[in-house]
Length: 106
Image (cartoon, rainbow, N blue to C red; front, side):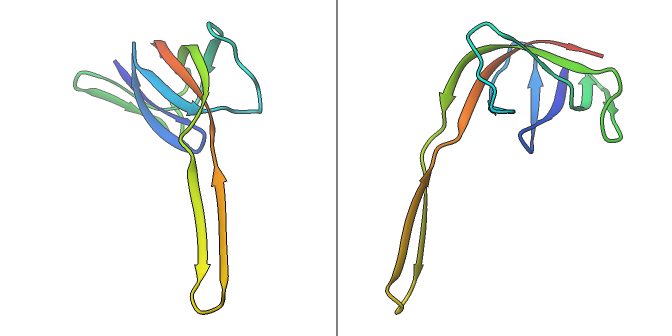
C-alpha cells in the first residue's frame, strides 16, 4: 500500500517503512521517537486500485515516527548585474525532520 501526501508545499509518495525528509512545520521542535500524523493524503493505492481524493481522501491518514531533526544542504543564492558593479550572495539551509512511515490507514 502506498499514499501520496502533501507536506511543506510538496507532494511525496510514501509506503510503509519509508524514511522521508520533510520540512519542519509550525516551528515545532521534535524529539526522537515522537509520533507524527500526516492527515493531508491526496491519493491511496494498493496493487491495481487507486483511490484519489478531491482534493483529499476522506478518513485517510499516514502515521510516522520522528527519526531525527536535521538541516538541509546549504543553498547559495547569488545575484549579479553585469556592468553595474552589483553583486549579492546569500545562503539558506532548510530545517528538516526525518520521518519513518509506520502505517497508512484509510
